[in-house]
Image (cartoon, rainbow, N blue to C red):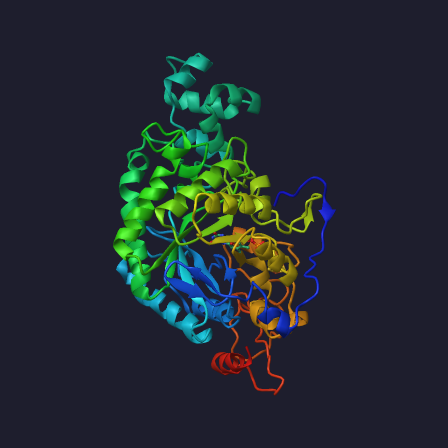
Amino acid sequence: MWRPPERIKWQPDPGRWPSREEVAASRLFSPIEIGPLTLEQRTWVPAMVPWRATEDGFVTPEVLEWYERFARGRPGAMVVEATGIRDIPSGPLLRIGDDRFIPGLTELVETVRRASGGHTRLFIQIIDFLAIRRRPAPEKFFQRFLEITDRHREIIGAQDWPEERIRGHLSDLSDEDLERVLTPRELESLRQGYRERVTDTHLPHISDLPQVLPDLFAQAARRAKEAGFDGVELHYAHAYTMASFLSRLNDREDGYGGPRENRVRLPLEVFRRVREVVGDDFVVGCRYLSEDCVEGGNTVEDSAYFGAAFARAGFDFLSLSRGGRFEDAKQPKVGEAAYPYTGPSGYECMPQYVSDERGPFGRNVPPAEAIHRAVREAGFATPVVVTGGIHGFRQAEDILEAGKADIIGMARQSLADPDWFRKVRLGRGAEVRVCEYTNYCEALDQKHVPVTCKLWDRVEMDEPGIRKTPDGKRRLTPPAWEPGEDGAPETAEGAVEREAADV
Ligand SMILES: Cc1cc2nc3c(=O)[nH]c(=O)nc-3n(C[C@H](O)[C@H](O)[C@H](O)COP(=O)(O)O)c2cc1C
Ligand code: SF4
């Protein structure tokens, strides 16, 4: 992963943990309305892909166990990982592109309801993404993938050469010569692997995106509602289709690119169609970027404009992430695909402890504040969720008290300790396993292997009945936390009853 050149090492600092009385009087643990429903507390576990679905996108026992473990911590809301809206092979990523996925997702909803005692609201993030190929070996690229054009013939002066000879010639050229002969796009396909863009409107399936996406998202949302979720989070962030429509880099000329009003058009059309299909009694929000964090991409001014537009359209919440774009991704190895969290924008998305003078904690707060302000100035109370390096109670409470955001997202901190919410609520914050922001988990994500946390994946390995990775080296969920002073063993139901009496 890319890291800022300053290489300043930061230590997480959760600060003083609150007493139960302080918690009871806090904003973080106070309710908030979000569209038609109420969250019991302003805590939020954002989407995290743990790579536990089947190759064809179904919920597995490992998926159930993963979300059950988070649900036991009883956050205010939890968002199930990015789940594909199309019925196409996507590797072990959850899918919701057909009704056959509904039973598994229903079981997931029931598992979370049971484990949280019905206290955690459950949303699912629904995503569309375009094709991306692995970086080819240069021989293969020149022999098979590159389409030989008149431009190549002209530049190398090979009008009459047979194609074979041109291919051979190109594969012998130096990097410098290749930069002259190949188009920037061809060079990118050679060096990074081929990647579709929303601006490839010469391809009919890309040109048609505005016609097909609203209904694909809407049908996925309908399935989420049928499965019993409380709502959907439309994935308008990072390197994926909808974020690319919103981006300043989108110069489509069909009314869906160029100025901001055009770039926000498809995201609004998708929302309207989703709303039409699921009705007003189902939460529909989105996750989008406070800043693209790449050259020529969206700035916070763009995102403030989008925030007001989304609020006006009737989105129930706005969850802000940042960066995570393909444009500055590191060159992958031959045979691997580019990963959007490897460049500076990836750093902004999941900031690591090796950082610059600003540090990794709360980098998304200033832009979130600006977006929050723009939404309020436009006359809307739409809740804004901020995420990025937040791990302490005081840090979260300060953001809420200052009115910079309404809900606090903690991704890696929840992964490090899904019981953060219960421990803090019970005045036992000192027992929190604090995330070190080393990004061990993110490296696993990058390899598309089961995500775990280094703080717990090798402890108590002889615990009976635990699931492990196929090589048997890592456990897939953290050990249970025993909260009862009375020594009562933790069961989801038992814990819930005790706490209901407690708080
Ligand atoms: C393993 C892993 C998987 C992630 N998967 C998703 C995802 O599916 N959708 C999404 O919007 N963000 C995803 N993220 C980003 C997080 O939701 C979050 O925005 C980011 O980690 C920064 O927040 P944090 O500092 O609280 O971890 C993922 C992060 C990690 C570490
Ligand atoms: S592996 Fe654990 S401690 Fe390290 S960044 Fe991920 S969640 Fe935090």
